[in-house]
Length: 169
Image (cartoon, rainbow, N blue to C red; front, top):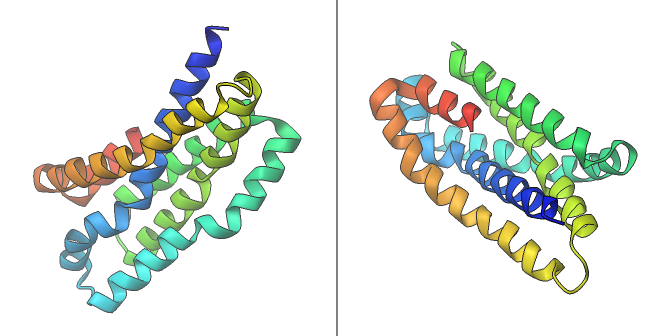
């Protein structure tokens, strides 16, 4: 029964990192504008496509969870999202950064379906709401931490450092 608290911790951490990935484009938009000479419209488009990438992939991740289980889906999705963020860190062209951010969002959304399924399996009906509430609290916390940490990473090491910090998470 103690294992379920580990499941909750992993799920909660995953939701926090997912939220951090979602706010990456808005938080890094000043540095992206400066580095790539973007207009405000360009930044708006980047935010739209990066954040919007999660919409069509929720269904796909749900199907993959049903077929292969969250134990396989969660590390695969987050591992691939980390790789996408490393690609963004070393990208020299803006189009590659956009593609990498879209991929990172689309891949990291796996946590939403995988962690929900894991919590539903490990917690009884009398504790599911509590467990899901804890997991969901990580979303605003993860976004807030990214808003604090990523600009600092940019000031210390540029966009590359910010993307690598996020990839490491």
